[in-house]
Length: 500
Image (cartoon, rainbow, N blue to C red; front, side, top):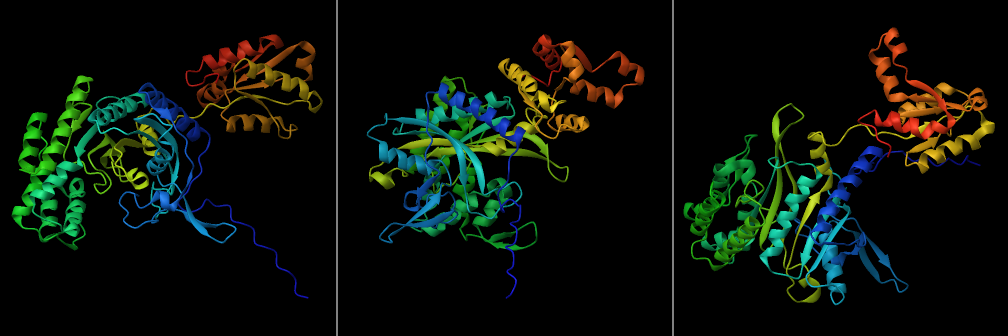
């Protein structure tokens, strides 16, 4: 009889496109989300936690920049007792679930409905550097009003949020545009009902920040050579058709009134274009009334965000400070948030037009920005470690841990093999513990404990001479009743270590 082969052991690897988050990363994200939620709550938005799983039918084909339904999602088919299958999928954003929630519960929700949501989303896309298939989003939306005050409020809230989490004024800019203005430009170009040509124009406009005015002009015309020397065919428009697009993209002026004047020239007699400009004027006036100047929020026609998805104003938060890339070159950090008005999403469920506007913050990118600014990314302070010198006195050590925790100090008892005391201190170092507590039999008999300042000890070990080491002891013998007070004193002496 052939010997049965053992099943191979599973590989301990993270699935492609996913990653694990540890200690300080999780703590920093939680703290940032708490700060963001505070801003949203102050603006009157209510929290919503919707299901991570939606039907594919509910998700539809509203994934930005993807034309085909179901593309880019993690989906599977479920069967009932009658073998009737239904496709389910992990949510790819937090907006599509909102549309379903609002349509389902609209009779019980206030109108307008203002909600914020935070959570993981999943996209079945090709992963790359810094691009994962699971990531965190932080959204806020207003559903049920066509008022431009809702859009202005979202922009103001985004500005306040960035400053609250630690991006100072001058290091960011919220830019605002309007899809209707672009529609007016397309109308002036005389493309008629040629949707393919319109889509090509929109895709070309989206490259403005990469190739500039000249590049867009070439791509709208006959084509251009890219950086690699390859020739890219153009859309094939005439110079007369190209000019309104260039006028639109370059209409931003130092003065906002001049910007609007340039936009009016770009859209000509287009009614929808004029409507879009009127909406931008309203948003600008409302923001100015709230004290948000062009140093924080500005009208910028070059901002293009998924123009097939949005129906009116669009906005994007860009961080303007420089960072160094992998090759040591300076570049700006770029966008960390975006959004806009999407008036057709709920209509899929209700058959009735329901206006909506909102924003989404890329949490991981914003965290990366804060680390670049030095606002996050420091070492996490671990718990106080109570060492174990005698297995028979575990209750004594547990009493110390409980006393420290009840005083609001993060603490733990060493749970490994206590035979090697050096290993206990190595463990405390690996946990980045600020203090170790030691009580052997002799200390117990005398009613004292040893408290070791691990942070000071590490600093002394790095640079101090033997004489300095003797003058600056890092281990103290104290009365057992003074344990909490001494631990607090040590932790307070280190500016980067706090009790909790």
